[in-house]
Length: 232
Image (cartoon, rainbow, N blue to C red; front, side, top):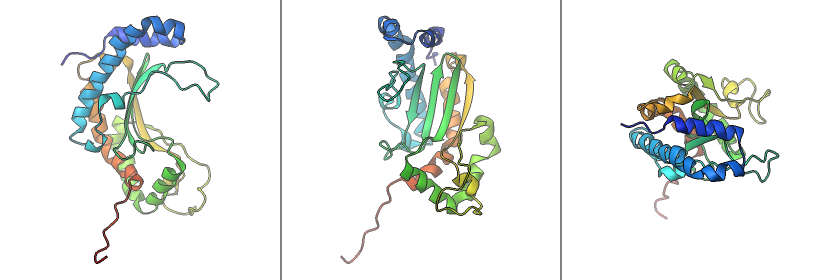
């Protein structure tokens, strides 16, 4: 399979970091479309096709997986108009509006970041996962700390409260997991990894390894089907 990206893609991202303004970007928008957006969609398509075998509930059209390059600056003091990376997010079907746990990668001028998990969940999602962990912490811990997974995703993305959240016992065996405000793992590879023909297979391999963890985190977040009441 032909390489999706060329060195021009990485050069564009490095230049964008130094020139993050509309006057620089707009005359080069065609370069962005050709060197970054088009190969990114092709890479997303390849990975998504592989995910049909191990994460079918996360399969979506590539255009819905690709993040926009434009930043939302309405409520930010940082008014830089563009992200300095191009990213993709595979959300689970049924959780599109609330996010949940999913698969992610982005490319910047210095790195290829691959990650998966539940990041910055909404309060009701956070509470649902914490309650789920009261009874399913052993399974979560086994998946989260498995040596093969840690080798592929060495960085723990979890952030934690210093004290147990309200309503949860401090002596519960899962309190270390329950204190977390998010759950996920990541790995950072050199940016030029995307120039290799096997980059799609490499990302898909890592996604497949962490898919059981993503599924577990999403379990308490999915709408529960009501059982029919017979005889009524």
